[in-house]
Each structure stands twice: as C-alpha cells, then as structure tokens.
Length: 372
Image (cartoon, rainbow, N blue to C red; front, side, top):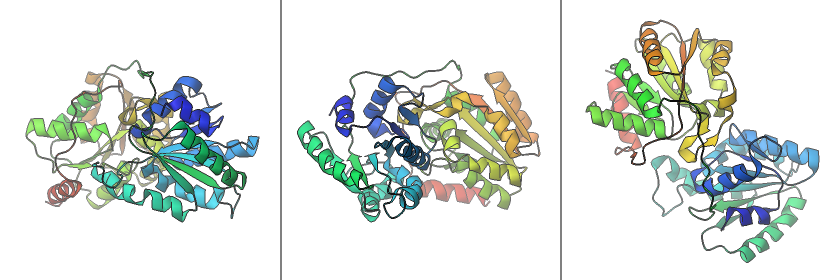
C-alpha cells in the first residue's frame, strides 16, 4: 500500500514517533510532506516521549494523533500508555503504527526474535485493538478497519496497525545528508587502533556491524567488544556497570546520537558517578541512519556542553581525523571521565554485513576476555 493512501485512511493531522526500517516508506512520506518542524510531525527521542507528545496534541486539539515505532519501542511506550493514555486514567486516544520486526516464522536478527513473539500479546494485555497490515491489504479493507477503530478512539481507547515488511511503500526516495566528512566506519577504525586490549561497548545498529567487520579484517577476534545489538540507548549504562567493577580496565563506549538521545539520563548518571576509566565517544551524524537516515535532534544541540553539565570531567568535539587521533591518545592516558563527540557523515557501505556469531557467543567471548 502506498504511504500516502495509508496516511489518508488513518485520517490524522499529527504524527510523532521513532523511525523504523519496516516503516521507511511511511517515515519518508511524513518527512517529505510535513518536514520535521513540529507542527504536524515530530521525530521523538524515544517512543515514550512520542506518546507524551501525542497526548499533548490531543489535549490541545481534541483530535487523534498517530505514534509510529518499531515493535522494540513498545517497551519504552508501555508506561505512558498504561499510566497516561489508558481509559482507566485519562482516556486519551492514539493510533499506533508499529513495524513488526522478528515476526514468528520470519528470519530476523537475534534482538528482534523475542520482541517479535510478544508484539501482539503486549497490545492485547494493554487492551489495544490491533490489525496486521501486509502487502495484500487493500484500501477498502483498511478503510473498514479504520471505521471500526474510530468508535474505539471516540471512547478514549488506543488502536494499533502492525506493519509487516514491504507493506507500506513510498515511490519518492528521500536523501538525507549533512556537511561532515568523516565516515563512521573510518572513525571506528581510528578508535580500534588506539584501544589496544581495552573493552569496547558499542551501540546498536551499523556501528556494531562495522566494528565486527573491522575486527574480522584485522584478525583480532571479538572478545574485546560487547555489541549492544538491541536495547538502543543503553550502551553507556552497560559500560558503567562494567567500569565500576573493573577499575583496572579502560572502558570505551562507541555510541550514536540517536541512541544518546533515546536515554539521555544515562549521561547524568555517568557524570554523577565520574568513573575515571570511561571514554564515551558519540559518533554524531544527526540521523537515525540504520533505519533510513531520518534526522535526530542531535544535529541541533550541543552535546559537549550537555556532557560538561552532566559532570563529565573532559568533553570535546572533533571534526577531522587528526583531531580525533589526538583526542583518542589523550583519552587513553587520561584518568578522568572523558567525552568525545565526532562529527560524522551519513552513509555506509552497501555490502556491510552482520555479525556471524550469535549474541550469546559474543557475550561469552567478551566475558572470557574481560575476566582474564
């Protein structure tokens, strides 16, 4: 189904959410039509944030908002759904559009398998009526479903459309770019060249995939890296848990701007604890590149000032390879919580692979190396 038809059937004038690769056509359509200025479309920091924005829109207008997300975001959204939207509380109607990663019977990455199994069950438990959209769903059928959903929305309930891969398309290709020159894979190569045998915790998405392939090329094995393939936004928290128990190790975090925004409170906790053996590197391309390149708010904020405000003892932003190398060398020897933001271009190799080891194999190799 074309994204513009899908949007027309939903009948909403306001959209907010976190981009998803299965919803790329829908997200591209929204960005193309409405932009991201906030009047009709807001790309949120996380899915719970989107639910709050949607609730505010309804309070101000009385109209039905749409919240879009990958099904992994259901966890972030459960609290405000249950304690804010639910008709036993405020009864705020919202239409959810959810990409179904890890659908049972469909091959997917390990972090999506269990989430895919419980996607519909979570909605059922929250008393949210749902309908699965696939590439055979027609305009007439979807219109009938939406007509039925409208009566539930009028009662202050929530409804959800679960979208299978390839179900929603958009003919126009939206190109996202910035003015940065460094590629993320090259940035990670520089990081790896300076970390020696130190542990690295890398964020979800292409960063971990690139780190894995760099280790393969270098014949270094994967015991030094914990690949946070799921749980977006929690890499720095995982690293903190390691660092406070292993003060003899310099712990490096390879983070992304979208991940940092998703759970930015983690930076405040890091800053308050001030672990002297952590180097927090944020590769900032101002985009949710792994799921399509849609912009994040991080392209318009000062992460270095935020890090300093959170209590990081050293924070700097770099835009070129020489400056990056210099800061990595200094961070290696510095006995203080350090933050390095690296400006990054949008883009990755078309032939970028995925880890060939399982998540549990990665954990076991990492633990064995860490506990030596």
